[in-house]
Image (cartoon, rainbow, N blue to C red; front, top):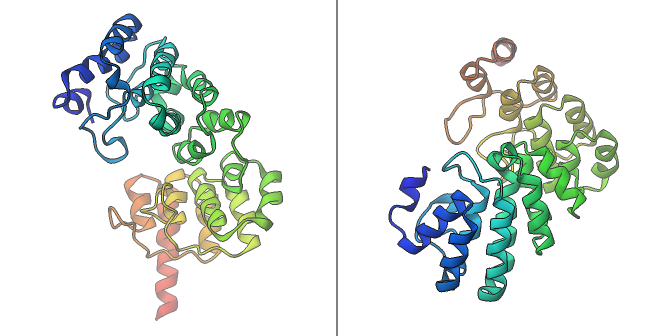
Length: 285
């Protein structure tokens, strides 16, 4: 989604505000919002998917990527927008803060520009609840953001401990985790290629190796697909030896784990899965 196509059909005043955010022009933004305070409470009639009908505040995250960069003073720009929203849009303020925190925490541009942690701090201090941003950040490998969210009060759950490779915490949390939490933890372990933790989780039982990953965590695929994309041969072998099926296809590309390995040029993994496929076919006959 590029910036031009996203903004070309919206209210010209809203577009001016977004352009001021992109440029880090606090004075222009302040002048515009002083005259048109409605802009901080209205949602633009544009976007799609997770960025459908955005608020102005969402644009401080640069997620989805439109320009590939953020101004160095984006935290000050965000503070200006939050201040205006506190007085002009109190009813939507909490949802704006929480969703913006999720966008910031799961987006790579904020991290690459060195402003992700500052924005997380600002949003949490303004009232954003950190727990809702943890799994999206984890699902996009934004582990520094996950760490900051934990410091700002987010709960250390089993999936989070898995993603951060905290084996002792995994061993402590797994016995009392519920089915959905274990399912998410298995998906996270496969996604990050943490073979040792995969083995630990499998030892506790109670997980379906062939179920698709939970919503919000690459739900079009199985843990074995995600182990393949991680590039970890040991993670793939751990799942296969535990009985993961080789013939389940993902829901987007209709590819098997072997198909993913070939597409991603994971040659050692592809050779291993191909051999396992051959063995399983011999067993059938």
